[in-house]
Amino acid sequence: VIPLLLFAIVSGGLGDVTNIKGFPTKSFATFALAVPFVQGCLMAIATTGQTIATDIEHGFINRLALTPMRGVALLIAQLAGAVVIGSLQAAIFFGVGFAAGARIAAGFLGALVLVALFLLAVLASGAFGILLALRSGSGQTVQAVAPLTAVFLFMSSMVFPRNLIEIHWFRTVATINPMSYLVEGIRSPLVSGWDAQALALGFAVAGGLFALALGGAVVSLRRGLVSR
Amino acid sequence: MTRSTFASVTRYVAWRNLRDVRHAPTLILPTLLLPLLFLVAFSGALSRVTSLPKFPPVNYTAFQYVYALLQVAAFGGAVGGTAIIDDFDSGFMDRLMVAARLRSAIVAGFVIAMFVRSVIAVLVLTAVAFALGIKIGGSAVDLVGLFALAALLNVTATLWSSGVAMHVHTVNAAPGAILPIFLLLFLTPVFLPLDLLSGWLHTVANLNPLSHVLETGRGLIAGNPTKVARAFALAGGMALLAALWAVWGVRRAEAAGT
Image (cartoon, rainbow over all chains, first blue to last red; front, side, top):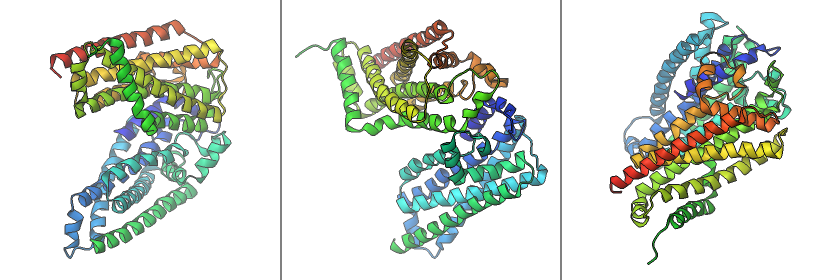
C-alpha cells in the first residue's frame, strides 16, 4: 500500500513537470512508476529480516542447528518467499501504473527485463534483511533500520532526472548514491526504451548488493549455527 | 491536602511530558525525521519546477519549508495521542483521572506539552532550511501569520489524537490517532501549487482544508499572502471541531470509569 500511495502522490502531484525542457517523457505516471518498484524492493528488508529475527527470538534457529539441514537452504527458502511476494507486487504495480496512464517504451520484453531487475533488487534487499537479523538477532533492530533505507531512495533521482537537478550538492549526492542507478535502471525500459548503460548499472548495483549481503548472511549464519 | 484546579492539572501534565523530553531528547525525532527528509530531498531535487509557467515567485526551499513546517506541527500534535495511550497502558491515566476534578485539564496539559515539543522541532527544521538556502520574502507580520497557522494545526492535531486516545484508550487507537492526519497532509499540493495540479489529486486537494492552509502559508512566506482569512477560518474551525471531539472523548473516558 505504501509504495502505491507514494506513486499516487508523486505521479498526481508532479504531472506538470513534464513541461520542463529536457524532461524525458510526457507521461509523469510512466516516469514515476519506478518509485513503487524500488520502494517495494526495499520493503523486503523488513519482511524477510523480520521472519528470521522472529525465528531467532523464538529459538527456532537453535533447534534447526541440531538438525542436519544446511543453513544455505534456510536462506534460499527465505529468499524464494521474497521473490514470490515480489512477483505479485510487480503485477500489482504494473496494473495500477497502466491504469494511471503509464506505458513501457521498451515493450513487453522491456517489462520482463524490468521485472528481472526488480526481483534481483528484491533478492538483494531480502539478503540484507536476513544479514541484519542474523547480526542483531532482534526484530526491533530490523524494524528500526529498514525504514532508514528510505533516506537513500529520497536522496536519489527518484522524482527528477539527475541531469535536470539544478541544486549542485543534491545532484552530487544523487550521483554517488547507488539507489539512483537502481531507480534509473528500473525506469529506463519504461521511459527510454533500451538504454544499455542504465540497465547495466542497475543490474550491477542490484547484483553487487545481493552478492555482498548474501555473502555476509552466509558467513553470519554459519558462525551462528556453529556457536549455537 | 490541596484540591486540584484546572491550572494545576494542566501545569502538571505539561511538565511531566516535557520532563520526558528533557531526559530523552530523541523523543522529538519521530516528529522531525520525515519532514526533514521531505525538506532536504525535495528542495534539492525539484527546485527546477519553479521555472514552470504559473509557478508563483517563491524560492523552492521556502515552498517546501512551509509543507515541512505543517508536517512538524501536525505530527508533533499527533504524538500527543500516543502519549495518552501510553499513560492508559501504564495505569497512570487512571490515577490522574481520579485525582483531577476537571479532566479536560489533562488534555490541555498535553496540548501545551506537544506545542512546546513542536516548537523545538520547528527550530531544528528552520535551522536546516537556512542551511539549505531558504529565501524569505514575507515580512515579520507574514511570518507571525505563518507560525500562527502552524500552531493552530498543532493544537488541532493534539486535540484530535487526544480525543481518539480518550475514546479508545488502548494501543489500537494509535493508527486512528495518526493515520487521518498523515493522509490529509499527503493529499495536499505537496510539490506544486494547487493551480498546477490536475486530475484526481487536484479535486481531492481542493476539498482538503489543509491544502488552503498550506497555500496561504506559502503565500505568507513569499510575501504575497492570499486568502488569509479563509485559511485562519479553516484552521480555527478544525481546532474547534477537534476540541469538541476531545471533550467528548474525556466525557466517555469518565463515563467508562477510567
